[in-house]
Length: 384
Ligand SMILES: O=c1ccn([C@@H]2O[C@H](COP(=O)(O)OP(=O)(O)O[C@H]3O[C@@H]([C@H](O)CO)[C@H](O)[C@H]3O)[C@@H](O)[C@H]2O)c(=O)[nH]1
Image (cartoon, rainbow, N blue to C red; front, side, top):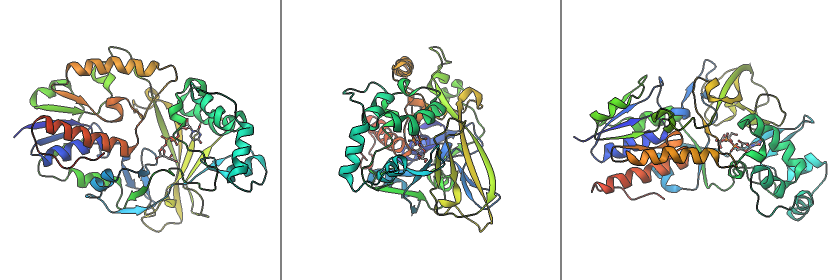
């Protein structure tokens, strides 16, 4: 039987492993961590609460092909994600910025979308072709809102000023003229896997032609034993950092246990101050996450840092406005092309892209099916 090595047991690796196993390949998955599910790994803690060990993973997409594929392995708990921002005044305001946010921030009453748009137009700075995150935000929100909601948070998150960050990063956060406070308003499907992400991955890997080896690091000498390798490790590390280090941010997670109190608030609170933390997550406010009754709950704060200060855990590729990190990645991409006959790079770290879960799954399904078709294999109907 033809054999394929998959490096990394996160979403990219899981999609490749399952798709190729179902097409008749024997798959060996290795992961250097002690668990499957990559950064989506979750577990139930001593308080009986499901915690996402690498920060909140909230599934959202408009790609029903991706939902259909995942739904083979899980039921869903409906969920719409809301976030509150803690303002310097101590007030809470909805994020993304919407009508309520503006009313609280400016202490005014706005009678409809027209008034909201007038207020924003009065704030906005005229910039026709924004070249970075600062210019993009200033052109839509003006300086006061930008410097409150985005500047300190972005400095903590990326260790960059907004001027040095690519605008695409902050474009992830929509702007609303109404009272809709949905964090992902454009996505038609949102939900959380009913039995958690780790169980979802266990079911994806549960196939007679897939073997998973944990606590096992990749070594290039291994590739010779397989017909092909799909590798989700950081591409610069694979090539021995020969062109230089690709910049990544990481997160240190600080979990405290506190009494369960009024649990009607948003599950995530973002901090607008310039202290070390970006946000905190109240896990028991997520559906299905209060697995057992408890009088206490975990609350997790996130402290961004350079990945070298966090055990080389790379979470976020850094997209600079000057394009420097993309240019560096392009050099590694050129090296990858030279070995594409035997190895392909996949996922966030393999392709150096700031991708959400549904994007990783979609890209992986597409690429796995393309790879199979190139080998004359019959494939399932493509997702888009
Ligand atoms: O209060 C804020 C929030 C964000 N920014 C800036 O926007 C960037 C993107 O933010 P976001 O998409 O929230 O970043 P992230 O990839 O960490 O989001 C994931 O976390 C959860 C969820 O958002 C938790 O509430 C979701 O599953 C993912 O999308 C951010 O980096 C900042 O530069 C800001 O300035 N202020």
